[in-house]
Length: 362
Image 1: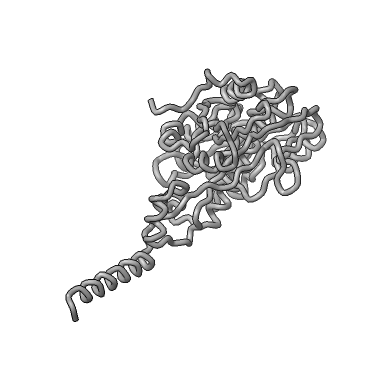
Image 2: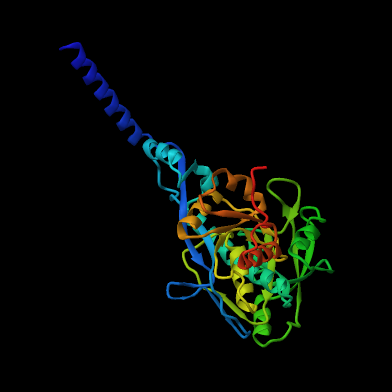
């Protein structure tokens, strides 16, 4: 066989072998890519995203789009060719599989966790929006979850209102853990609670629950240290002065909180918060209106620009990552609080964008 032919044949076989290896090798990576964006001022699946009743609302224009990220499933295994393509592509990010599904978490578990975070973010967004507008919101501390096989199982239930621990009034969820950990494991702690059923009945009747009962629980030692625990997670429960419903399916996680809260503010105030402009954004939000960082910021900016956004409200802690690859035509507006975001939107609406706080490389 001529040397040239042999060389070509060997090269072809090597290339085929490499391609086969690239397809068969499955490195432990997953992919993130831009997901759909939804205008919180508009509709999704034929109905308004934000539905408010019992309070005057005002017409809105423009966009306040929440943004999402698509991720490959927990059971999907990329091959080497897909991983290399993802690393080179502008509109996707390849990350270690454990980043998206830590500790062997299944896709179902991740979906459930994201759904719970999304539900909680809606309640927090409502609270932040109303407080920004000076509208009172009643908040109480409740049992959010009870761990299976814990000391609190069958004694406390999700939705129970926690009034006090060992006679000390509880004002915030963090108070519960602080009061319990004053004990040593195997000591008794007394919870004063209003059972969930009574609390719900009183709320429907528009009254404050009056009855309470003391529940005695013996603490146990935490798995990772010597803290005393009872096996519950406390959280806030809000009572709003009118109905606010957020209608959006197939979305998870807490990162839409900021955009939901701004949409609510826009609908409850005269005028037009965006001035008809196309603004997108992301960020968690707490009850006091503080904006927190999220994951997948680079994919969210790409998705926002693809949808037509000109401005992107960016949590300040995400700015460093976001500026590494800003889509052409998109201005990254740095925000730390809902009030920051509101003031920036007013500047955008007025066309006074020179003074916008922007994410920079410096």
